[in-house]
Every structure is written in structure tokens, then in C-alpha cells.
Image 1 (tube, rainbow, N blue to C red):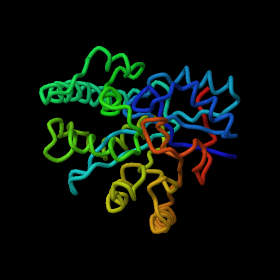
Image 2 (cartoon, one colour):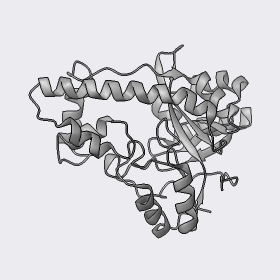
Image 3 (cartoon, rainbow, N blue to C red):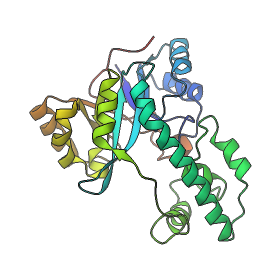
Length: 270
């Protein structure tokens, strides 16, 4: 088994179409994959059909943008193997996507006012098929610099962070509600990259609501994070997952399948 259970596509903030990613996964001998696009289950049936074409087992997935209001910090909740209708997940994510789109359009206006030339229609076209604009789509029209380059990072920070003209964020949903929605749709709720967002203290508080897993293997995790995840997984009986957090050209240059999941989620939607 070679399972990469944290992959993004052009259905959210990944640069590559699903089929392109699956072709790459086949070349990299990945046997199991999960597209966890942000706040959307769009394209699941297409993804599953393409998975059969490339003989790669597809695990239905999502990454919900949530918040730990007690500690005032972001937390991402992964959902796996949910019912394909995803009624509860859609109910909480649809508003998130609307808020993100409204905020992104506002950001574009602020950047235009600051003297940058941006064509809204071209950005919308770049954002397809997600139909939601992310900061990566805006950046693509501002610079040709590589995502990991110093110039890209400086421009991104100057616009979207601190006192940048397009700084600020949307209101996210409570992490508890994200877990509850995934569980209500029959899925496995997993706290994503707790080392990246410092989500460790929240994990015990999500157990009563049905949290079933914790992401161990992630590009931003250290040996210390592995130990913390393993201790929590053992204490609360949580499944450990993992993957590359692949975003194509919109993310760190880590090859698909380079980081794999310590667990296989064998149940898949057909």
C-alpha cells in the first residue's frame, strides 16, 4: 500500500486537474488517494470514475476550514469516507464557500486600489472548476515567481498579512460543528496537521463529538510532532493518517506520494 490521503486539486486551491494528479499518482505508484479539497465535495463522482480508470483506490475526502474559538486559532478538519450525498457537510460548507468568494472579490478590489493591475474575469477563469477564488489564484495573476521563492513570499506577505491592503479573513465554522457534520454523514473526522496549526490541546475536546483520527505524517511535522500524535492516538484510540498536502504549483514542491499515510482507509465510495 502507498496511500497519499492529503491531496488538493483544481476543485479548490490546487493547481492541477484531478486527472493530471491521478496520472502523476500512477507514475509514483500511489495505490490509494484522497482529494481533500477545501470545503467542497464537488467532483466526487468524477474523481471515483477516474480512480477506476487509473486503478487507484479513491477515498472520499474533504478538508474543512474551521476554528478553535476557545484558543482563537484556525484548525483544519479532514473528513474521509463520508456518505456521497454529504448532506450535513454541504450544509456547513456552502456558506463557507460563499464567504470566501465574497472576501476574495473584496481582496482583489483592494489590491487594484493599491495600483496592481488585475482582471477579475481572468482570475475567475483561473479558479475554475472550483468556482471559488483563493489567494493562490490571485497571486498567479500578480507574479510568475515560484511559490517557494523569496519574491513570492514577500509579495504575499505584503498584501495578505499584517497591515497588507488585502489582509483579514473570513469567519470560519466551529471545529466541533465540522466534526459533527462529518460524523453525521458517516465519515471519519480527523484533525489535520496539528503541528502546523498547534491544534493539540483541542483534540481531547473533540473526542466526545466523534473525532476519530489525527494526521501524523505531514510536510510540516517534526519528530516531536510524530511523538505527540502517536501518544494522542494511543490514548484516545484514534486512527493516524497522512499525506503530502499536495497543491501542485500552488504549494511546496513535495512529490505526490513522497509522504504516505500510516493507515489505510479501505472503505471507498463506488
